[in-house]
Length: 216
Ligand code: E4P
Image (cartoon, rainbow, N blue to C red; front, side, top):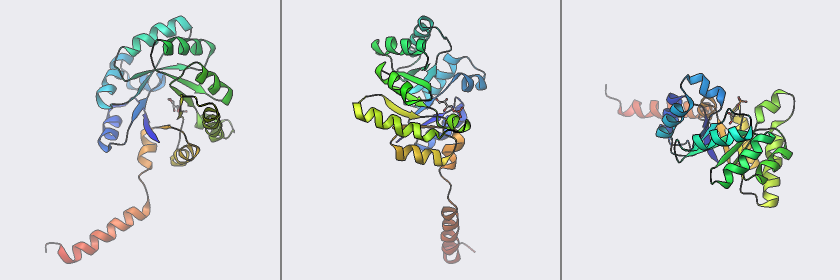
């Protein structure tokens, strides 16, 4: 399973890069706005930190404008993947951009039917949102299982990017379901490290060692 960081924050990305476990980045207009810099500048800075697919989302809502904006975003760096929402216009833009050789991440996917449409439009990634479905009382993870299964049935090349993951259990469940990628907020990536027995065990190892070898 690949880990992407779901952030536009450069400090978080630098920490993840140091750990050597971050394969790519997803951003969205909310995350870009949080950092306060124009999208092209922020995405270029992200590309300098992480060498992997970096999703940059269009804010246009009409297909022609989405295609123009997406083509422009793709020019920032070879690693940029253009992100479009799962609307009729977004799917039209996905088809056109994909035919032009630009990789597209179709976002805001909340049903298996929508995921099928994105695959048929040549999406490079589909982003089903787990946490936001949980928020409305549905079981978001069921969607990841369905999409992985359907894509396998038909050998679609589109990769399943489990999004809106809110905690370690979401990450484990997405991995069990066979998602190709999980995109994680930095906090969730950090939480994956934690186990009390690791801390306790290390503490004991060091105490035992120091009892014999520590300088007095
Ligand atoms: C993915 O690309 C989205 O940016 C993200 O996962 C949304 O997560 P949220 O529902 O926690 O905002």
